[in-house]
Amino acid sequence: MILFVQILCIILAVLLVILVILQQGKGSDLGSAFGGGSSNSMFGALGPSNLLGRLTWIVGSLFLILAMTQAVLLKNLNTQDNLNFPEQEIVLEEKTLIQNGVIIDGTGRKPKKESILIDNCSIKATGKDADKLADSNDVIKIDASGKTIMPGLIDAHIHVTFDEPSSNDELFFHRREALSAIIAAYNAKKVLYAGVTGFCDPDSLHSIGVDLRDAIKSGYVEGPRMSVGGNALLTSVGGTAGRLIPDEGLRGYAKIVQNKDEIVTEVRRQIKNGVDWIKIHVTGLIPNQKEEGEISVWSFEELKLVCDLAHDLGTPVVGHVRNAKGVKDCIKAGMDMILHATFMDEEAIDLVCETKTPIVPTFTFQANLADFGEAIGASEDYRQIFKKEIDDNAEIFKKIHDAGVPLLCGTESGFSITPYGEWHYRELEVFIKDIGMTNLEAITCATKNAAKSIKMENKVGTIEKGMLADILVVDGDPLKDITVLGDKTKLSHIFLNGKEIKREEEIKDITPPQGWRLSPYSDGILTQELAKK
Ligand SMILES: [Zn+2]
Image (cartoon, rainbow, N blue to C red; front, side, top):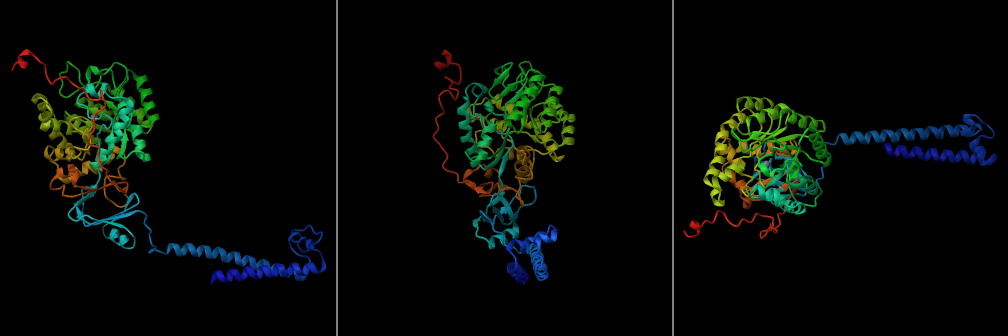
């Protein structure tokens, strides 16, 4: 109706203007119709000079003003109409409804049977809303009857560039730069195919992590979400590789910083190059060691310098720490996440409980050596040492977990003891068996809690409306048997960022490049006595 009045007004205004022109044209030229002869007045410049013409001009202008007012009214009314349209149809893009499955949402809440609707990259709705929205849209439906729907696993401690070395010698001296990058891309895919949709790689060989993360983000390489460090910072005392670490410069994943100037330069350099984390090897091994665990090889002032500098540049700091002093120094220095954190004393426990600094115990390496070391030729003594590290620390971790300190699941995948795509469920199993968590609590550690390690808490790690859709559909119940998460044949569907991962055939027959693996002549020393036995 308003539109009709508006059109009518415009037509009348145009007709009147034509009438004025015709009237003026009778007695004078076209110029006087609009110019009003030689008049210089405002009115004269715009309007006609005779009375009838002037009247017609005024009525025409009024109609024009009326038409413009109608147009504004119409526009406002349309906006109002839109606001009053609650039932407006939502058109979904790429959408999948997963229904009939039991959802473990990663928050620690009790599981329940309901649907999830994935639209494009995120979770559009859960429960009845998901079913309702799916009804009015063309969606792909996945029947998850008898299955579990849960967030993708997040592994808070992986070394994707190491490629499963069996010794520090192999790791530090047998890894070429370009080949390491290419093989890391392949290994990232293996990790994703095992249901890990995100991981933290705190330090990488030749600082490859940043580039691999970016290649995955850009879609050149298929792999999980990554958050990465560059070279780990070590003092010249070294880390866990003893004398293999030189007094200065670079070696494998390590950058040796000798003084405060070098610390400042290196932290700034890494942040400039795009790391998500600065990693410090706070403790290491020396030959004449009297303490349990490892010895602190950084001073508090040095740790504080790294933390302050990195924080000023908006970058968090993570530390490898295996003793009480190291944990205390790191927390006082403001460190954001601690790997291992074993052998804490009462004071360290109190500090951790106060600051609630996320801890990644990373027992998988030790647990695998202790339980299955025999299969790969590890000595009994060696196995006992690692078993003891878990036994001595289990109570402490139970205590800090009960106090609300976030424990994150990290597996140290990347060594021969912890190959890619194999053991990402294992830390959950250790948390359950040794720390005494329930299966549900362990799943929270590997999902919601671990999202902190990739700096994506509130974006991934839980199944809730609005979260990014990193989702697993598991054929089984991890609340009854956590090892189902380690069985790739039971992973019915893996979604990353709302897209289902198709999982092409994994390459099975791999022959490592020459000089890549250590090729020892023997396991032992060939004495005559042994030869003649
Ligand atoms: Zn590590």
